Amino acid sequence: MWTASAHIITAVIGAGVLSLAWAMAQLGWAAGTAMMLLFAGISYYTSTLLAECYRCGEPGTGKRNYTYTEAVRAILGGAKFKLCGVIQYANLVGIAVGYTIAASISMLAIKRADCFHDRGHRNPCRSSSNPYMILFGAVEIVFSQIPDFDQIWWLSIVAAAMSFTYATIGLALGIAQTVANGGFKGSLTGVNVGDGITPMQKVWRSLQAFGNISFAYSYAYILIEIQDTIKAPPPSEVTVMKKATMVSVATTTVFYMLCGCMGYAAFGDDAPDNLLTGFGFYEPFWLLDVANAAIVVHLVGAYQVFCQPLFAFVEKRAAARWPDSRFMTRELRLGPFVLGVFRLTWRTAFVCLTTVVAMMLPFFGDVVGLLGAVSFWPLSVYFPVEMYKAQRRVRRWSTRWLCLQTLSAVCLLVSIAGAVGSTAGVINAVNLHRPFSG
Image (cartoon, rainbow, N blue to C red):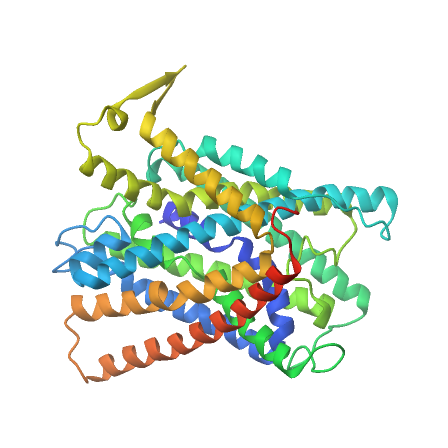
């Protein structure tokens, strides 16, 4: 249970926590707090539905589904399986890009924090993030050679510890800033129209905030893969997974509420889109360095937690397609390590591709919002609900069926709204940015 919780916390408490103060600023105390609690409840409930779909047929005795897409194929089949695969793996690629951007921003923030400390806060301390993206990519190439998901348990535990480290530092700095301000900033309704904000911008930003919050809670699409690491006799895999889900969602919600609310209390409507790299705080610079270093270490682990299912999918399909190819079966020995040639080539190429895309689109907040909005409904709500209805033979037009359909419809509307707002933000950022300019 603790290992599964560590995997979930590593996946959930990621870069998303740093944008929650900005999301709170767009929505205000009332709607911002309500939306965080709402997404937490939805995430927990749909995850428990999905945990029930790890095995087909009777609970605890049916055939295992080793991945999210396998569960969709076994229970729903056909076109829904193909649609799910495209959405899930495209989203995992997007997350890899987003985490590369976030890691480079944190590495750059360490350099800038030291520069501000030495040269004063008015010095621009400009620098390119491209070298840091390349460095992060090089580290991920090495860690990507770990063959299987269950062999990265130690990396998840380290990453989970790092996530608590930087979230706690962000919380402490927010509290200290609030005390220094002499009270809470912010308002019930968030950023006011006027002062350079048009009514349309208020709408777009509010919708993007929905996407940011939904991204912060997204992990359902790797839940089955995490559940498959639980070494327990049936039916206790489901029991253990539900406990792990409750522990991890409750833990992350507490952290999210504290970090988002205290960040908003500290900066009010001026909250940056990344709490620890937006330089609302300048001192103590060494504490900012520790926090951003913890973010980088966490993102190294989180990148692997999200990408290992994609690696496994491609390698399994390739092995089935070309079982006799020497390229597929050949191995290289590097000291004590044995590396498959195909695995080395494909995983290295994937990391290089995501790094190049990140260098083209290095705007963190807009990418995070778009990823969250696009993936939230299909992967975190629609497929878990549809699989649960099929698995448990929920009778059409029954009370439970109507409640599940209503949940799915409401979440679809929220997802569409978030996607529209985030798309507007990305388009605006693209117009202002030159690719590879860092």
